[in-house]
Length: 114
Image 1: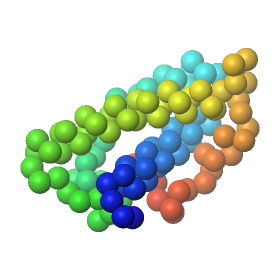
Image 2 (image 1 turned 90 degrees about the vertical axis):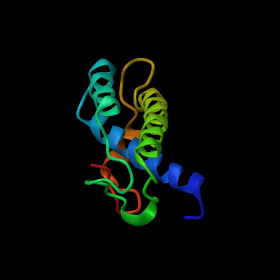
Image 3 (image 1 turned 120 degrees about the vertical axis):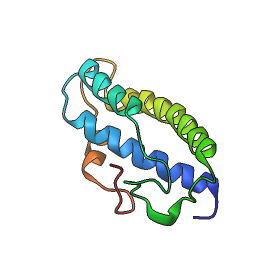
Image 4 (image 1 turned 60 degrees about the vertical axis):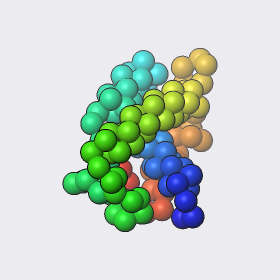
């Protein structure tokens, strides 16, 4: 991990894995959209906070304002990742893409977001 861009990619890849895992439970896109949207708007921890699953990989924010800025940025990124994930998990006819669905069972770097 060489910098902020690498950390962002790691976090968003783990987020996508979380969304794939959630999509696996549903057969239709509208049901999966509701569940993924609930994950997007759910309050998530910031680096250094209680429940942060990535340990020291991310530096803790300097103050509350910086933590909130990070949370808002990642919320926007999570919304975009959610939209794009749903686009690849479900075909235009509503059926599931088995190839993308297979990644729901794998962990990235042995880590998982809670």
